[in-house]
Image (cartoon, rainbow, N blue to C red):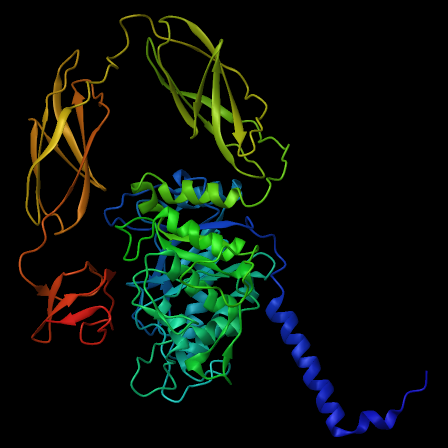
Amino acid sequence: MVVNRTLFRKPWIIALITMLAVTLLQLVIFNTPKAHAAVASKTIVGYWHNFDNGSGFIKLRDVSTKFDVINVSFAEPTSGVTNGTIGFTPYNYTDADFKADVAYLQSQGKKVIISIGGANGQVQLTSTSARDNFVNSVTSIIEKYGFDGLDVDFEGHSLFLNSGDSDFKNPTTPVIVNLISALRTINNHFGTDKFYLTMAPETFFVQLGYSFYGGSCISCDSRAGAYLPVIYATRDILDWLQVQNYNSGPITGLDDQYHTMGNADFHVAMADMVLTGFPVAKNQNNMFPALRPDQVLLGLPANANAGGGFTSVAEVQKALDALIKGVQLTSYKTRGSTSGYPDFRGVMTWSINWDKFNNFEFSNSHRAYLDALSPSVPDTQPPTAPTNVAVVSKSSTTVNLNWSASTDNVGVTGYTVYYGSQSLNVTGTSASISGLTPDTSYVFTVKAKDAKGNQSAASSPLTVKTDAAGTGVDQTPPSQPGNLQVTGKTATSVSLSWTASSDNVGVTGYIVAYGANSVNVTGTTATISGLTANTNYQFTVTAKDAAGNVSTGAIVSATTDPQSGAQAWAPNVSYKVNDEVTYGGKTYVCRQPHTSLIGWEPSNVPALWLLK
């Protein structure tokens, strides 16, 4: 074929070819997923507390198996907001035990990611030295504990836009530019094929950018939409975005209507904005492009204690029906696709701890929903056999065993201990087998099972002989305390009473537990003080005997009284409708439930507060 070479010398032709090549390259970069093996196509992400805030502490290895990704929260600055150096120390763990639990979850096919920031972890990379400190310290943390990736949960004043920084595709504000550089450097260090990068911004930093963009308006908050340039610049290496659809004021959707948190309408409208794309600050010449559906999750509180905007299971799944199946709501119609996004990634929750506190309602309900979306893939690979089965203790009627965890391609869900013609199912790597005959030899074997029902080969058999009769200790627990009730309460205390338990050797006292706290009492009444006003608490009362046996717990819930009079407004407080606060010498009434943040002072957010 003869080619007219003079054609390619024309400047406009060269420019056209160059433009098409750049456009094609951008399409490939921005729309191609990472090459590494992904977690479940329908993913549940949960944040695990590296602190105790009343929701209760959970060892990593005891996290519900319903979660695919565990975000350890949080790593925080060690030397001020602008130094950039990040630190992390496991709470209630030795380093060795924490590393072992991270590895245990990974052996089940889970991904364990370190999350940086949170409400108290303000990070501002104002200089290149701060950027380098950030890169070096974060890289060190990930390598030390074996994390699978990094979650960016910058809140508060970590990100903002300087005046005049109006183009999200070409940002100039140092805290933005340096963060983008740091994230790409960390990702390149670990390799795109095995490193996870995720983000969990608030609606204020993403969807609010449709109405206001901090660098291009005089009167609005400089933080409005400040995550948009970071998301845009890293979208080729970003595994998913999980905007926090909670603790949010009303946000304008693509229908130019306000949407208020706590229902399906809000979640669909917020997700549709990043799935469709939108003009930043409503400038049609400045379009934020859509993310892939597999890059988007709904961020949700696990229960009402976890944050403002709790949404019932039914409403969340109504939103998922609209987003995944195209079952449109009457209130809001999706713009990007009316038939749904089958590849929509899933859900995230704050938090794993609050989910357990709420009896696993979030993880159990939404795992079942997501699993039902597509036919299960047959799996015939059994777990490995348990090893190192050993006796921890024994008596005349009881044998306590433990063993090393098995591994499996889809995750181990439990174990079965066999002895004679009997068996016992357990979820962890230990078991207490009771009701045995004194002075008798038993042969124990253990098998593991996975999420698909496959069972491993048996462990090596272990022969144990129970003690002779009369040589064991008392193992009969007291009866459960009866008629547990609330007899009085104030804004900071709750009084309880119950009827006495009975026991074969005598009850020595009672334990009243609430959240991560507990008190010991000798009688059948207790007053728990130092509580937070207008807050729901669950109290569990158990009896104990002289041998240390503990009964099953009696449970009752109570909500402390509201604080009398208007209190001074403060950040990080959960407010409800009609709560009154004072600020700047004036009194305000709460218009909708939310958790306050710095920058959301009553005088700044009339959507949340009404001047009295």
